[in-house]
Length: 280
Image (cartoon, helix red, strand yellow):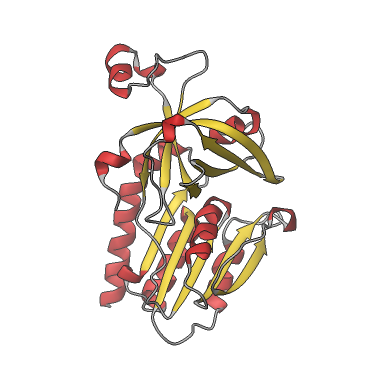
C-alpha cells in the first residue's frame, strides 16, 4: 500500500487536454509544474482523491487543506471523489484520468464534461495496492466501466505472453475501447443494454473454465456484483484472499459519501459470511 503521507499530500494538476473516448467516457490529461515530483508507477490501480470546491467557493493559493478546515465552515470544504490513474507519463509529466459521464448526475463526470484546458484541480494521492504478479500462471480481470481504467493499465503491465482473461461489462458496443497488452489476453466485452449492472459479468466468470495453476485476480466495480464474485471465487473456486484484489468501487442507490460511510461494515459482513462458508 502506498505510504499514507504520500496519499494525503495535496498535488495540483493543470488540464492539458480533454478527449471523449466513448459516449460515456471522458479522458482528462493533467500536467503543469504542480506535478513536479509526482509518481504513480508502482501499482496499476493507483488512485487519486480529487478535490471539488462547492459552487461559488474558491480557495487561496497555494491550496492548504489544513487552513481550509480551520478557517472555513464545513459546507465550504471541498468534496472528494476517488478516481484511478489511467496512465502516468513521467517523461512528459502528464497524468491521465478517465471519467464515466452520465449527463448532469454526479460531480466528477459533469466536471470532466465541461472543464477546459488551463483549469486546475487539486488531489490527494496516489494510493494503490495492486499490480499483476509476474509469477502468476494466469490472470483474471472482471469489472464494469468504473474499473476499466485500472484493468486497461494492468493489461499494459502484464509480462510478455502472460495468459489472462478480461471480462468488462459496459452499456453497449459503443463503450468498448481498444486495449493493448504484451500478454496473451482474451478480452470479453459484455453489454448490459439496460439490464442489471453486473449480471452478465457474474455469469461470464462463473462459466469460465479455469485453467490449472495459480491465478491472480482483479475484480472491482459495483458492490453488488463484486460481492457475488467474491463469494464465487473464494468459496466455490477456492482462490486464496492473497491472490485476489477485490473491492466495491461504488454501490447502486448510494452516493459516494453514503457508500464510503457504510463500506467498512459491508466488508466486515462479507468477511464473516465468507469465514462461515469456508469453515462449513
